[in-house]
Amino acid sequence: MGIFEIHGLTPKVILAPMAGVTDAPFRAAVRGFGPTFVFSEMVASRELLRDRRSAVLRLKADTDTGAFGIQLAGRDVESMVEAARIAEGEGTSLIDINMGCPAKKVVGGLCGSALMREPELAVAIASSVVRAVSVPVTVKMRLGWDDASITAPSLAQSLEGCGVQAVSVHGRTRCQFYEGAADWSRIADVKRAVRIPVFANGDVRTPEDARSILSVTGADGVLVGRGAFGAPWRLMQMQDAIDGRAVREAPPADEAWSVALQQYRHSEAHYGTDAGRRIVRKHLGWYAEQLGLARAERDALVRTRDAGPLLDRLARGLTLAEAA
Ligand SMILES: Cc1cc2nc3c(=O)[nH]c(=O)nc-3n(C[C@H](O)[C@H](O)[C@H](O)COP(=O)(O)O)c2cc1C
Image 1 (tube, rainbow, N blue to C red):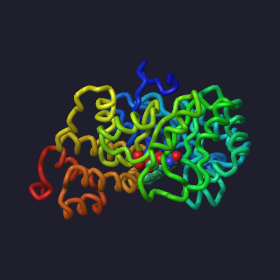
Image 2 (image 1 turned 90 degrees about the vertical axis):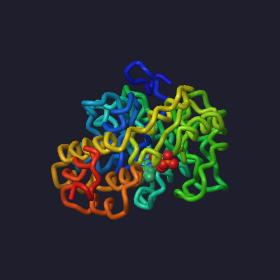
Image 3 (image 1 turned 180 degrees about the vertical axis):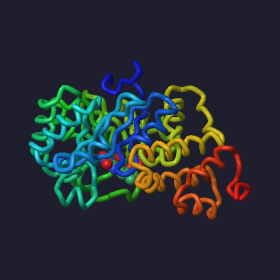
């Protein structure tokens, strides 16, 4: 479990890698509520080698927030090894290999969850990356390609054999995409199959869910994706529930909006003003949903060119109507 250690602690709740979501500004927002281990957005190895500048923006170490993991995607051993070396050079604490992404673009390029149908290639990639870097290597996978091929337990065993130090398992098959409910009981089969830590993932939205998935699966920790949308404090609450402490309240609305404002400013600084405002927009919609803004106010917030002044008013406890 030590590989996810941060500031001497081993958080059991980890922010899942999410393309277009878990960028440096959002990771910092999550870290503002406690020492959570966070993953980068997925970085395609070929893209990284071709256009280093934009990809490196996604894997730059979080100077203000410490340890984090970079997730790489690809099916070409050489480019994965090269990308892993670049990621290590950028200061990542560990490298995760994506074997779970169902998107056509990634699967069409025959990486992501397609690797679950090619276990030999999956193992070749993982073992080459393990040999190439000195940071720990982990793998994120799904249960299998479809219901007829639940290969996660055997793949996890093979990966353990080649030096992968932990796996996380999203309790759906590739063919399910995001439909239906995640099947936590099948994650338990992976846990039983290996000795390395297993992180359970899928449909963990509340502190109670976080406790349940650990008890159903026996997993060592939980990866949280959509449950953190617009609620970077939720991981802290989940950690409370797992530790058996009283779950801390979500921050009051004005404080929560000030977190959103901070993320907005961070995004402007990170990507440049215009790109940053565009990229952070979906997060503002999620904050609005979490914090119960009326539809018209939510629309005003996500449609305006510069949401800064509106966020500032919300952070001072005013409504947008009062502010106008
Ligand atoms: C917008 C979005 C982007 C995602 N991008 C990635 C990714 O880059 N790499 C990855 O391994 N999984 C990715 N996922 C999957 C999540 O990491 C996670 O496995 C999935 O959402 C299930 O967990 P949840 O129910 O907690 O959201 C993404 C999910 C979403 C919703």
